[in-house]
Image (cartoon, rainbow, N blue to C red):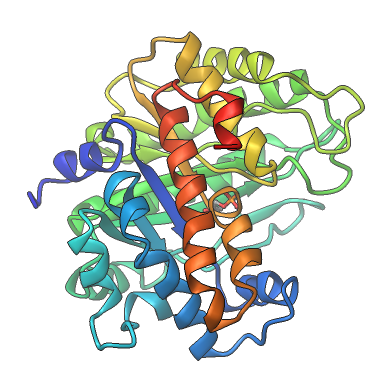
Length: 341
Ligand code: 13P
């Protein structure tokens, strides 16, 4: 594998491939395990991730990179193979979530800023040693009639840009993730409101990236799609989501960025596939449009596995199915009737 960040970024968004976000923190994976009645032990976390990373067809053909939590980056498969080596053997790039979570922004009720810049240079050099070649930092943007404030957007965009510059200095591709939330209360905003807020956020993020001299060719953008809030009465078709999302991106994202890999953000597994497909089927864009899904790649695998070693093959099959459907969507070749097959 080449070590130029531009080449790593290109490999991460290669045709028909996308990113598996398996970077749930120990607290977040507890919520996922609670939903299947599985205890949140290190052994169970290891077994679940090994099931995903050993899904050969999905990993070889549909997954270009895997985002891990720090514990997972240093974990090994049961036979002693480091997870990093399993992922590389499948032709995918190992990645690491480096932010330390969203915390309340002072004097800004309802808004957060993502922390983790202090000491990041040292941590990045350790993660590079461990084999990580890309990283992720998620900024969380609240949305309602009045939020976000410009100060809230600016604080998050500045942190994203500082993080991205530090990553590139370390030879690591930054995934820049500003997430306008779709399902945090009140979650009743319209698609037009999401359009307006996402446009303002991306404009500010790219201004800050420019101020921090981030090389656009060596980064990946991970945005939300432009969708109505999950509790908005007016839900939208994949074609409407595609139209709004691509219009916002075309106005805000320079064509030097090699790829845009969406988060799923609470969309159902089928919605996440259908919406991505609608964009790739109808639009020519200067950047690749693909997936960096957590829940939308894992939900069916998690329930098929159910924390039971006897169900590893079923869990792996369920993950492979979602990976293949999303790979088709990244090429605009998915059709709903393929889900049954
Ligand atoms: P979801 O696809 O479940 O939103 O997770 C993606 C992610 O990495 C969030 O930071």
